Image 1 (spheres, rainbow, N blue to C red):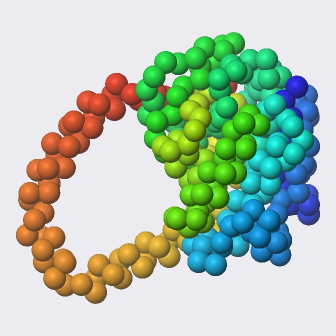
Image 2: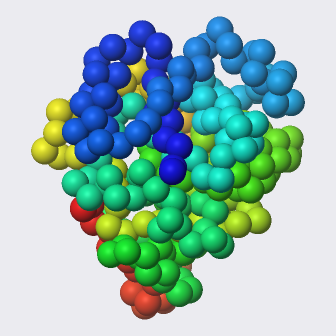
Length: 276
């Protein structure tokens, strides 16, 4: 049986009711995992040996990161063959029951499986693995979102170590950038996307009510601040602006050629995702 955990603040009654209804209607076993709160961050940073002094993340994003890391560690401590990890604003696909109550469908060499529909188009290469009426598609490039994924215990062990080593030299970053960007490129195990997907976050599901999220607002605020700082730096340097205008025609030609090459290459690797 697959052990499913849903990360949720202990006092998030609206979200917990949503999850109880969503998983209950489909008769999927799960447990709530109390999300990390800002006052626990320093203690957990010390526990996992992570330096968060100069982290460019909000308190909400750090709490989210440590919630996921804590579940990776739980998979190790509880000796779980596989663990399903969800955030508490997901909607489940109609057919999710036959996948989320069992691990029989998971091939032995699959350790990280993204089951969430985040972007509808991904890049992939290699052989698709057929399982039931789905395909497991190897991921080769960034595909963000950590609202629904499955890890083996071996992957959990490796992710904890990988994250510690990565942050030592590159600093703390958001959890989905670790799992579904940098680990895809540099991690030990291949990451796969299940298609059709089994879940989607409320803010990406057009026909569902968006569940309010302070974390999402924190992320948007941080991204806006980063963009603002970048714009200010550009405006302060007149010489860079002049040089950019001089070289613009040459860059445009280069980018045009590059787009053609990239388009041809990506057409060979593009996969369109659905939710079912």
